[in-house]
Length: 247
Image (cartoon, rainbow, N blue to C red; front, top):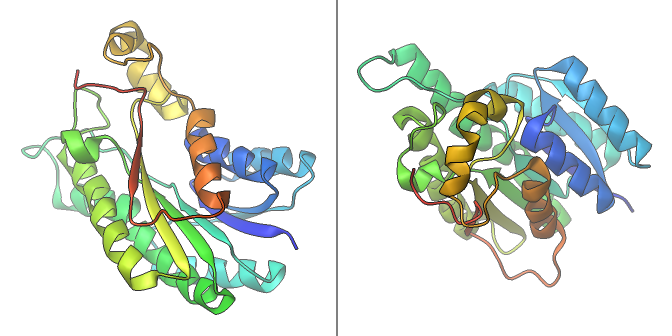
């Protein structure tokens, strides 16, 4: 029987790279995003790899929509084995400039979205007797943000919240469900390129491996956490940053 994965923020960037890596491991992929043309492109690539793919347009901050999508995927494909909470939104404004609405939206997309989709998939995984979840945090959960425009306090707070949620849910959802978080450093994506391209030579100097990360780098770690057997990892956060120090 094929395994089934849901990938939020799967249209492009890290989500697309992770969807490819999971498809290579034999997963059928349900993509969730607002960007329909980009999702359709990624879905087409997955189908070309011989896997099934479905496309679900949604604002990940909407609780009811998450429940509906998860129910539809489970009904169509019979199971859900893996959830990747990857959807996120940058917030470059500092404390003295951000509005309440902007702060709430940053938390909703980056943190509440994880709650929305975990709340929906957990009962299904419990009934199956197995399931795995990975939520995308950030190195900024530790650093509090550096000079990147993505990394101001609201974004860092949301990503740190993912780590606390992950540790607490590992206790609540085990032993059937293993849940972990990933903390990427600087990754070259469509969004990241616009923020880091001019500073790439400078950024490389602060990374031990001498390069920026790629979506494929993150995808390999996600695929490992989705498939490794035997698995004795839950409640953990995994840094993938080429050993980046604060710059």
